Image 1 (cartoon, rainbow, N blue to C red):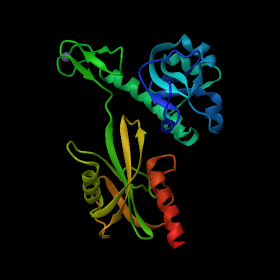
Image 2 (tube, rainbow, N blue to C red):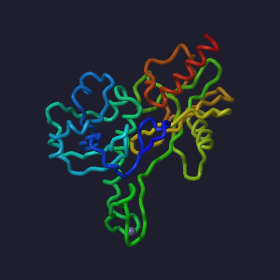
Image 3 (cartoon, rainbow, N blue to C red):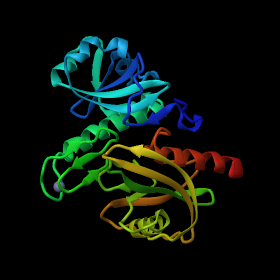
Image 4 (spheres, protein in one colour):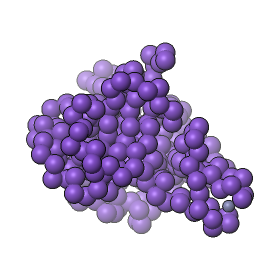
Amino acid sequence: MIIPPSLNGFYASPVAINTDKKWIIAVIAGELLVPAAVAVTGSGFGPVIDSDETDLLKFFCERRITLGQWHGRDCEVWELLPEAASTEGFKLIELRTLLMSAGDEEFSLACRAVQLLDWQDKHRFCGSCGEPNGASDSEHALQCTPCNINNYPRISPCVIVLVTKGDHCLLARNAAWPPNRYSSLAGFLEAGESAEQALHREVFEEVGIEITNLRYFGSQSWPYPGQLMLGFIADAVTDDIKIDGVEIAEADWFRYDQMPGIIAPPTIMSGRLLQQYIDDATLTYG
Ligand SMILES: [Zn+2]
């Protein structure tokens, strides 16, 4: 199989190509069982286990799904019984922990693994007639035979935007967050909206600011659950902040070299947007 270089080695597919060795991602109740070195050092090792190292885990495997191919090998997620958590040489970690230690590719694989298991669990019955769904042989779909309906994993697009005004950018604190933790603004797309419409609406609803010159930055899968974050940078037309007081507790303009105490790391979209802005602003205003 030839994988386009732009896919960074990962090819999402429900079909195994039957390679001799495989990559395994082990999941127990939504958490990842990883080689203990990952959990202890967090030094760049990922959640992906070489199939040579999985003999001990096989006995605990309740369900397996092909995720696709990663660097030429089939990659599967195994859902393991809870007893597997105490297997020597492995440790259970939350998916979020991986954000700090794993690369993008491995985080994507782990997201896919956790999402597919979660999706199958929550779509065991047809939403139309209530009969049990069956699995498709050829694609990641759950099928209701009486209704002739295929259900696919649900992905929910969200927009996230860093609003800027010259050497300042707008950051907000969610009402549920501790003091001094700030992020860019984000929200789900409403049915029928374009990403651009959602951006204008979310920013205006949350902080009362009008925006223009929207620049698409990139996207990131975010498994809480099944979100796709679409990242943008935009210019503010107005600068008088009026917070909604419900979702947003505080919002303010921050100079590029005077960021608040707690901001997102550059492994997640919010942090990437901010880093890009800080780099650009440092060149322009520094
Ligand atoms: Zn049905």
